Length: 250
Length: 246
Image (cartoon, each protein chain N blue to C red):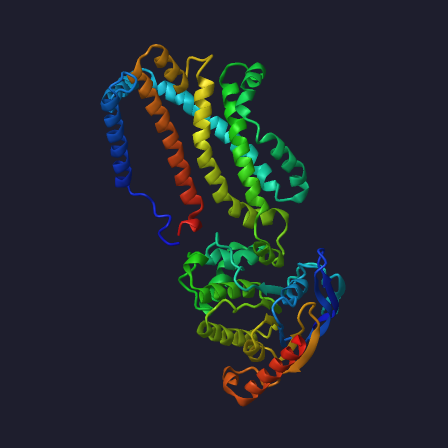
């Protein structure tokens, strides 16, 4: 087991970045199409974008995604943890089984009708989708804790809240954080979708706008920014996991 | 005195784990319960600790019915006692924390115990970073932190290698003599039962019944292991176990 979770060094990130750059460059030379500019062209467009409004679009997108994920987390985790109690799970489990497999993105028209075309509907759309991903994982984790952890605690006279504090929550946290890392990808995809129409703010809008103007370097600059947003959130969650679940990584 | 009075346990799925178990352990006495695997030894211990309820019969402690985990009892498990997400210090002080001891008192009790069990300097380590023998010593420390009058142990040493095992058997013997606790040890090792039990109770295969109670008056010394009487007792226990299997 030891060493299996060794952290990648900074230079391994550098090598990966160089590899992506190289492959991208080779592809754009081979295809020789305006639809795939070289990474250097995109870099210039990116820097030019930074001087214009790329940052403000990034901030709006970050705000939407952060609200969506935070809301989903704070609703899904308590419900998932409480599913440890059979009496709660009895009601929640059938709801999950029926509602989870539905592609929630199709609810977008309904959400917009209910909450308007502003930030709220976008946040709620992200929230709904991520909510289920976190809830399903948290519930599975809290339902499958070895009884061996409970006996010593019970023999010391622990009750109710103490059982959550000392066993259920610590056991579930690594799984919740993994679910959150996985949901970053999903939430960025949803973000793009909800920002791609009826708005003039956000990276999704920027991508659609550049596309309609056939300005491909700008299009890629916005895509790169979206990728960096995902990468940033992912790294942040990774950092939190290493700190909160130190016992897993020793 | 702790007493088992006609304890029978049938699980909801129909498994008959224990059948009419009767015995008692005097204050300060040590008692080893031995039997083939699956004879309901662990079930018996969980009932004694107040975590499981028997289907029939009852546990009496000083003549009083045991209905929920008692403050006087501490429990030690085979290999799953410690919480991997807590450090050695946090594991040992947990029981004290649950019983509302203040921070200073906890630190005092825990550090003196860790010192006594040779775990000084490992306070901030996680269980995973320790050897099996050390982990089990942490589990002893956690149980002893509550200063129990009665110590219940479920095969506490069975996942350890032979040498570590003997060391910890000696440690247990020393602790028992020092602290004058009542000890109830469940084991499947004949030598361990004879080394640590002033009274050895032999259970039959499932459903567990008491086949025989063997008194073992000469235990209590580390050297006992090498004496003729010890081997004679082991033979007696082995014969009773074989008798139950046929």
